[in-house]
Length: 191
Ligand code: 5GP
Image (cartoon, rainbow, N blue to C red; front, side):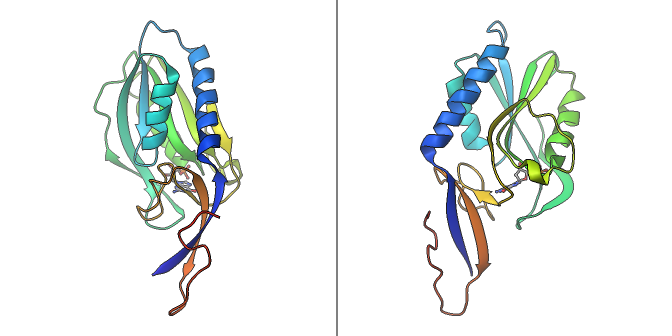
């Protein structure tokens, strides 16, 4: 069993402030005559989508896509797999791709091509978290919640091996093997 130490990077209040600011920026750019089509990336984007959709105060439609380059470890495999396709057509819609976090940029670049092939009227991107120091693929980000350092983060929808998604804050996670019978200080608790 591994031990994990959390260091809080963004509190629930800070995240709420960031989501409100993003919603205001996005609202300024769209008219209210046609619904904004939010396409959220599963699974990490689920809480961000729920909060953003309610903060926008715009008519929205919602769809999900699951394209992932991560396995059960903390490193991008670089290979994108489509595990859940779009349910609704994007043709002639104003589409906003909602990403939890952009790291190398490979997933978002792949998704942009994927959605663009469906001929949306417009296509923009929003990410709650951006790790620009890790960027390998140049990817346009129209709206960014927070720029964070090169740390592996969990919480507010993001997981490590399917754990920690429920946390109301975003924390950097340091995972290391637990020594036999040993206890890691701060185990499971935000510091
Ligand atoms: P990219 O293709 O930009 O390298 O990776 C994007 C995806 O990798 C994100 O949608 C997310 O699922 C995952 N990812 C990247 N960085 C992190 C991280 O720090 N924590 C977690 N939990 N997932 C991450």
